[in-house]
Length: 345
Picture 1 (cartoon, rainbow, N blue to C red):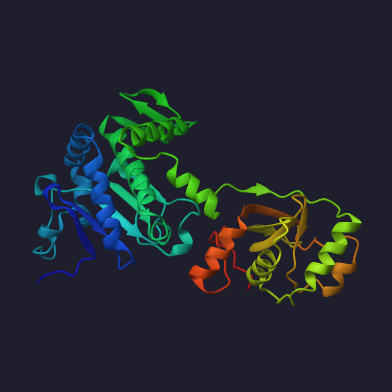
Picture 2: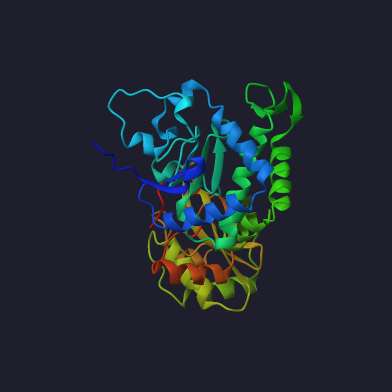
């Protein structure tokens, strides 16, 4: 009996298939991955194919590594070995766990991770919700970067996670740090004709980067207090609606003094919540969202911005906020969740 598998052929000659789990944009991604594979020089491609053929028999028991044309005719209880032509699993999904297994609930995905290479190069994951929003050339940059990590494994570079300081090794000797691995992958991406900075530049511009900072607040000046009072008169802030309040305000103000921010905030009870706020003049936090312990009269108090004890996150360009609203047609987080805490609003 034929099996209904969520797969798209990428390169049947080399038994490369995409597992898409019903995600939108899978056909486009499969074609871009195919183009990326073809652009990589023959030498590294042959090295990766040879590496994938060396998969040990324990991994071969994982059905996902078996070529789909063999799985289609498999019977319950059938066992497979490397001689059956096992190949890597290339996932296009909404999340994965620390072992690279997917699909998993989206909440388990780490913000800012758009792709990963795990199990010594036999599992390659791509985060579908972000890949769908990337231009074609950036998608190819991302695919090339993860394949560069496969090429590292094909060259004999391994990861030692058991050491006091995890690092990469070659022939049992220290090869470099994790940062060295990323630098080496970037060099390969550039040598193959792709842009090693393409993904990072796009992530930074759209507020997707996982880089976060702590926002140190200062006492607002009299002029800033007056500005905040005028600002708050332009909208009626909704309870537990931080995304709507802040996005409406940042788009209503075009004087360049405000910045839109998203991240994690710590309340007086020590609980972290995902939140949005504004930054005035680069040094004064403005949080327009009412909270249960906060009244609207707080804007007349000495310090109008202190809703939470600590604000940690990142800024997002005003233009990106506008583009996000056009794309999503609703107010909501632009960067995604920063933790497993519930999102206010």
